[in-house]
Length: 71
Image (tube, rainbow, N blue to C red; front, side):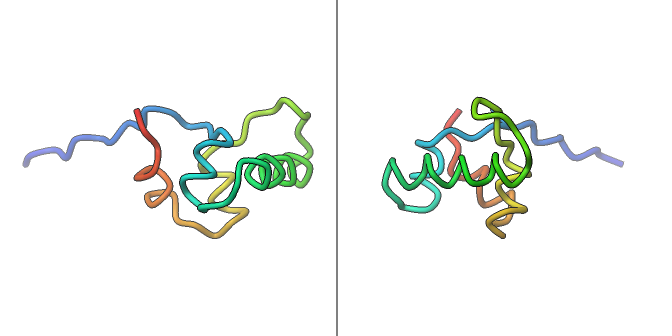
């Protein structure tokens, strides 16, 4: 039986520009959203937000988020 290739994402962390592309919000609002997620998760101000964490917080499916990430 043929094995399906595993989809390996180019990245697993999100940046404000990614959030802008996904949500259509401004740069400032995207930064605030990431900061809100960091605070909710108890991360430091410089902590990374993963696609999975963003998905759980916003309710946007992970596969849809990966479609917006550019390699």
